[in-house]
Image 1 (spheres, one colour):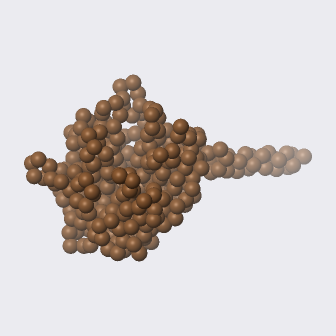
Image 2 (cartoon, helix red, strand yellow):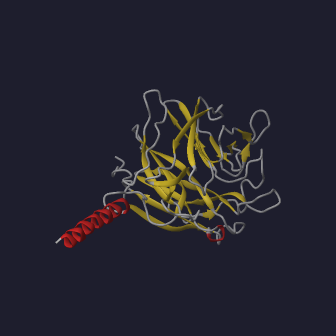
Image 3 (cartoon, one colour):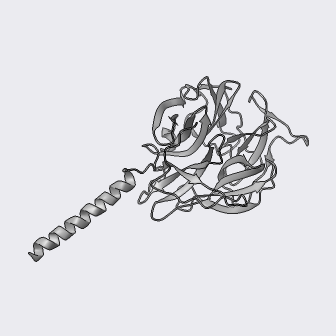
Length: 328
């Protein structure tokens, strides 16, 4: 009887453990938001739909295309395969990553980095695709990179296009611990120099590594970036608050990082603002516990909150993710 009771007890514990594990991965939980290895997600709202444009997370020579995902409620996502690839972008041959997208005059402009160039002598950098719909297909807009040189020490990767309240479009970009801001021409074919003659101004805050992002809330400019190494558990997101898109950006602190009970390497994010509300969601990638392959990254969403003084509260990364939130 004792042996049978012990076996029953062990069986019960095993069932509970497996049930708990399954609940973390499936059940009513929504992180990751879609299947597959995807990173560097750009989240945005077009009309009454949410869209996410991620990096296909694989070895550089396999990163030759991009997928996109759309949702009406942040929970159920539709995959749009190969919205752009290197057969369309003739100068790109690998490492297409970290997309950014903006809609202007009925066209959708998809900014991306390609080839992971290490010097001014190599071909590659930041390019643009254009399409009539957010799901593509996107065509090469310029037939060449928009930026293909190292200015102020910034590797031409990880671009984010910011539309200011006065109508001006700016690009923030840069790897190798340097971040630049540049003023885009109205047709996105190049840049307009600033009044002092500079085209690329460095705005690098303390701790910056890569992955810049900006949004405006209550008249303040929130500038965010990733810190740490992208393959390590210390990858994270920090931010600053300023009165203009030029800063100065004084680091406030980290608001997204690993949780040893959930996932590691939480970083390279974007922010979705639900139109007409004060609801904000952080879209980011992270690495499942136990994963050692640097490319095994998943895209997740969690709610982002502010305190009464306007500072961002630290984000708790979860398996649950967010509840359904249609745009009204």
